[in-house]
Image: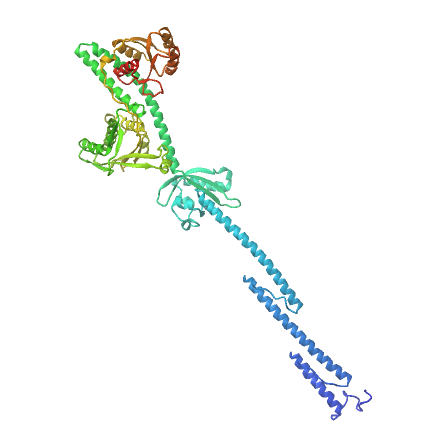
Length: 636
């Protein structure tokens, strides 16, 4: 072909013929190619050269340019698709970062890299979702655990708080809020728990707190203290403290033991009064034994001495012994072993009205008596003498507590003691009660005095003004009716006595009218008592009234005497407390010898044995003789 169109100038590159037709065609083609290449360079890949040139070199150049345009177009399209895909994936990642896990990357791209990137993003998204689900589950578990912990801490009935190393309260439960009177918002992170500790325990608490962080085993875990609530009220508490593992924080449980302390004090006081009652009973028993002899022999002297002067001396002896016996009876009343006299169904409402009128002149004009009685009349079965002793002692004590005058208030009502009151006053059983309340506006009492006011012979009055048996007698009388007495008092704020009497029936013992002629007899009687005076005095009275008397100072001798005279002795009068063999055992052995013999057990205080006749030594000899005569005659 080159030969067919041979250029005489040496070819296109060397041709200087401006009018060469072939040169012009080739020049146009080159210009066209340059323009297209320039447009391709500018990004316009839509241009193509569509010429049918026979020359191979030109055709080859056109084909190359067209292919370049196409490839560049494809490359631009690829880059465009890649850029769009990356932007879309970036937007998905940004949404995922913001927590929008509804975003999902496209996996439909023709670009393999974009497609793989979308798949990778989606797989990571799924893993994130799984991880978030696990976090949510763990969070829910933590929330549930926290709620359960709070429920447990709130329902245990114990005040609990978590304390930081600097003693700041980090957490408290509802019980703790109730105990101190502050809310969680007021305390948590703001207040130190030692702010509530009473000053007397504060230094000790701080020392324990520091020691627990240095050497936990040396700091006590449990101890008692006192705290003050929002109103300044002091409460006795039991504190348990332990360190929370892996922290310097402490968990503190606080139990309010104020009521428990009161109950303990009530029980201790009750036991103390019971012990004093037993001691008083024993003293009264021994005292009655001595007084029985004194009164017995003095009575015999009074009947036999005709000289008036000497007889007056004997009467004074009898009067002094009788006063001593009254003291003995008061001790027996305190120990609750005095017999209840004749009971009457009293209208207490009217009785208190009458009593207030009677007592007004006695207590003086500078003291006003106010009554607060139930609208309906209240009746109760009680020995009137006992009621008078109770009221008189309490009212006169109230008067003595108000030397400059004041007010005495007497109230009476019916009430029901429920289980809640019983829990705080365990000695008071639930049920229906009468409540007699006597209060004054006097000088009041301190705690030490309150603890001892019911003790026999305890008094705050001068020696010449009080025996110390008034309130102990009241205490014993009320206990005899299965009642309770409580005192409320503060120094300078007056005193209130509350008496609770259960509404129940009590056995009645009627008074006895004695005719001396009916006391006489001729039976043989065995007296068994280790007190010589008792034996001799009772023996003398029995002989005065015609009885034949055998005496024994102990059980062995009594059994021996009875065995020798078992056909003759009709009745055995046996002391309950004997040296060696007890009175009950002596009675049993005598009964084994002769089951039909009559027996009476004597005691320094009233006793009540089933199927055993008994008698109180403190009663008069005429009453003892009447008892013996009635038993011998089969009337008892």
